[in-house]
Image (cartoon, rainbow, N blue to C red):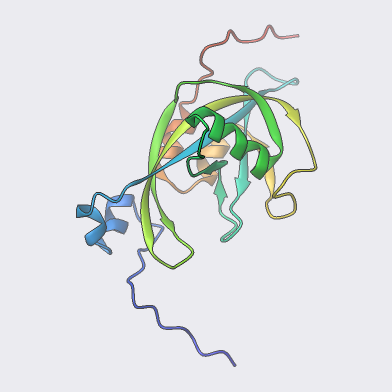
Length: 177
């Protein structure tokens, strides 16, 4: 039988809003330690009804519903990093908006067990290519859902709001066929 490991660092309750989570690790509030990430709101137009679907994926560690996101990449602009994350994590490519469409905050547990508050700038990606062979294939579940359903599935309150209110920007809506 395994003996449970003792954690020396307090762990925030991830079901709580960000400020309550940070209250469990107060040093993070005052250290200026917010880290930057870039994420992709991947969407596609639906054929059978008006509107769009948004891609949600499961995280590799906890299998909770998230959107593709990751750390900045050397030599890549933020929107390029978001597009690369969408490809590596979900096998999708498309037209990426160069300006962020929103941002949200969350707490990321790092490999060493430390907690890092993160700010995620979000870029819209109109998906035009879906590939079954991608870097993290088999490590995640992918589902196309309505914006309301995407908001129900993710945990972060600010991301929920962004998904419910998401409107395609920068391009005209396609004519219904």
